[in-house]
Length: 81
Image 1 (cartoon, rainbow, N blue to C red):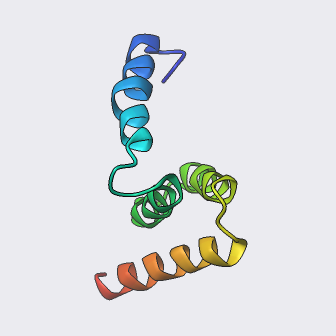
Image 2 (cartoon, rainbow, N blue to C red):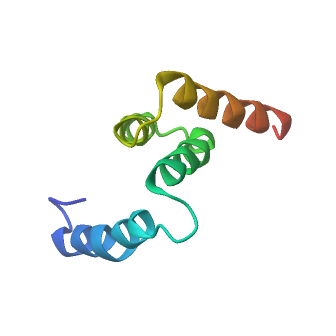
Image 3 (tube, rainbow, N blue to C red):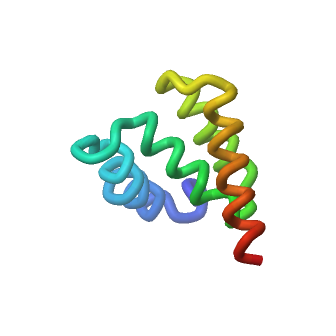
């Protein structure tokens, strides 16, 4: 997106991603990353999922916590297919 539509990429990063990830009044950054992991599982976007798993780790999540978030998301998805 950055190469094709640089203005759109800047807008998405600033107005959507930055504000969403930066808001910590309800959830802290770790909790937000874990929610992203859960939301990305049904979308089947492995590169974004990997990025947010790394982000969760950088926020203090253990490997077990990240794996748990993935497992819960997959279990919920399986119930609704």
